[in-house]
Amino acid sequence: MNLTPLIDVVFLLLIFFMVSTTFTKETHLSIDLPEASGDPARIAPEQIEVSITQQGDIAVNGTALINNGLETLKSALEKVSEGDNTVPLIITADAATPHQSVVNAMDAAGQLGFIQLSITTKNVTGPK
Image 1 (cartoon, rainbow, N blue to C red):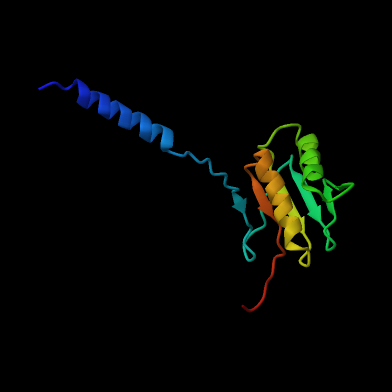
Image 2 (cartoon, rainbow, N blue to C red):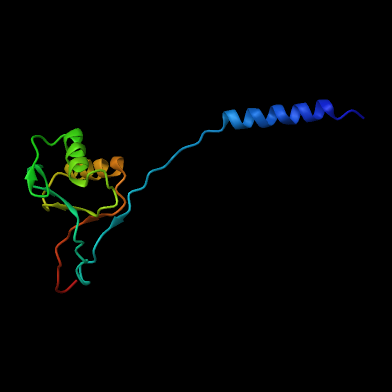
């Protein structure tokens, strides 16, 4: 029995499956939320703080941005971090901040590859 045609068919199937398979790269943001009743998180000596006001105005390390666009925020984060995306990034937003502003800040951090992202909260004590 001649096995050459069988081996050819197997290789063709292998090539077909390799070409038709789709590979997706999923990006996940690691968000470290501090517990409301626990100890406050340690403050790193070098960190980047993105502050968002109630109106959605954004400031990076205390410097207000010209506009609230995603590209402007990415440029500011690149400049402040000097390309080091291992620096902790803290997002501080007002409780009444539009959700889209916080999502834009998280999106910019994710696109630039920041791996240490946290969101500040207020420590609430009292009955649950």
